[in-house]
Amino acid sequence: MSPIVSQRPKPKVALLLARLSTRQRRWLGGSVGLVVIGLAAWIWVGRSGPEALRLSGRIEGYETDVGARIGGRVAQVTVREGNAVVPGQLLVRLDDDEIQAQLRGARARVAAALQQERDARVQIQVAESRIQESQLNRSQAEQDNRGRLYQAQANLATAEARLQEGQARLRLARVTLARTEQLTKLGATSRQSLDQDRSAYESAVASVHALAKEVEAVRGALTLARTSTYNPAIRGAQLSALRQQLLQSRAQLQASAAEVRVALAAEQQIRAQMAYLSIRSPIGGVVIARSIEPGAVVINGRTLLTLLDPGTVYLRGFIPEGDIGHVRAGQAARVFLDSDPERPLAARVAQIDAQASFTPENIYFQKDRVRQAFGVKLAITDPAGYAKPGMPADAEILTR
View 1 (cartoon, one colour):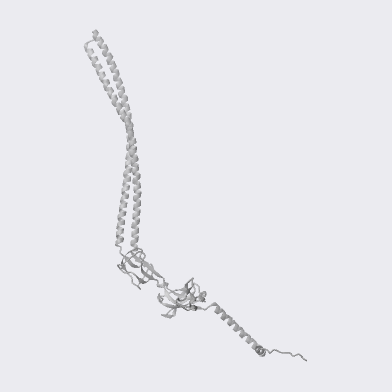
View 2 (cartoon, one colour):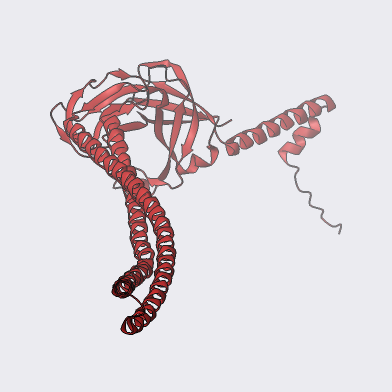
């Protein structure tokens, strides 16, 4: 009994390929290759992301708040909301009555401090001249005292010599008178000679008494001359007092000079505050808010006006979390305004939020509530005056 051999039927595709000619097989293989290549390209494009990411948002701008650096009453406001301003333009002027009063007071303090400084300089000059005069007087007194002492000593020596001479004449007159008295008793001389010798003796006695008194007077003058040597010490004490006065005058001068510097600094500060009374525009732009009117009293730091530079506006929008990986800072973008959607404005990605935000908080469905988005800023290269804050707009970011 012969074995039964079972044959499996060939697939239909194999039968079709077997019936095709060689040319037809080549054509079919090329078509399949093209399909595979197309499929791979489609998968790569899908993975690399879209060519542009579309988003919607609102035009915003960088606002500049103009405030008062000092408090005061508003005297004038030169602009209204919507007015264009240029850098340095006067916007607000504050009343300067109080500052002017402070300035007058500061000037008066400066004048008083300068007068005190001048008085201190005069006192220094007077003290220096007195010290110089005292030094000269002291030197002159020392010389005068030495001269008087030497003169008194010389006078004393002269007086003592004259006293000794008188005493010698007295002794001679006494001896002569005694001899004449003996001779008169003996009758050897006349009575007239005795009278003359007695007169000479009495005159010698009187002369000695006078010379003795003169010596005492000269000794008293010498003692006075010796005591006058203490005058230089007294004058030295006076000189020390004058020098102390000079030091006090110099200290007063330093204090006055410091007071002058303080008063001048206060005056300069007030003058600087006067410059703050005129509030000028720091930028060129448009006034978008005015919160004060003339007559209002403002305090330091209060915002008076708000300015906006139209050339620095941007579009603020959000990108879904799944697409944020295709966005980089600096990428080119285009902004479409509702007023002219056919003429997009060139822009670039200026900023990407570092933290995601939940899409609107008023969504209560769980599948929508867990979706997150990243905020981006698209800086408009040239707004040309068309893009204004508050306008809604669409945009697309060119990712490739």
